[in-house]
Amino acid sequence: MMPGIRRPSPYRDLLVDAGCSVDVHDPYVLEYPGVDIFQELDDVVKGVDVVAILTEHDEYFWLDAGVLKGLMGQERPVVVDGRNVVDADGFIGAEFVYMGIERGDRNGHQIQ
Image 1 (cartoon, rainbow, N blue to C red):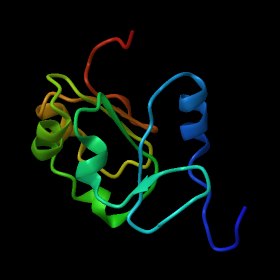
Image 2 (image 1 turned 90 degrees about the vertical axis):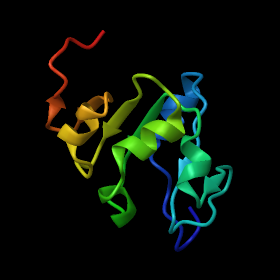
Image 3 (image 1 turned 90 degrees about the horizontal axis):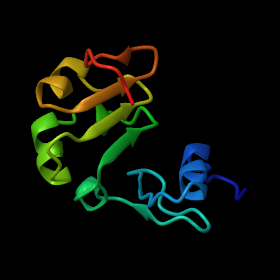
């Protein structure tokens, strides 16, 4: 690893290995070998099915569920809150499928 550069989440590599298309947003990491890192969140979330939050950057605490849903363009988008940074009830109220670490399935349905 290059000095001063954090490694993107190992979850990214697992998803890519499983055949998923993965874009990475990080307002603080400008580059990482072999990984395109986007600085603008809007560029990453347009048209995606799932947003996974795996860091506690300040920007993620203030995500607006309605705006994010509009950018994603999905009727029932999914948010995986790996750091418990978003308002779970607000996202569920905006018709997201919400999963949070140690919060489990707050949607009241079985995950399939």
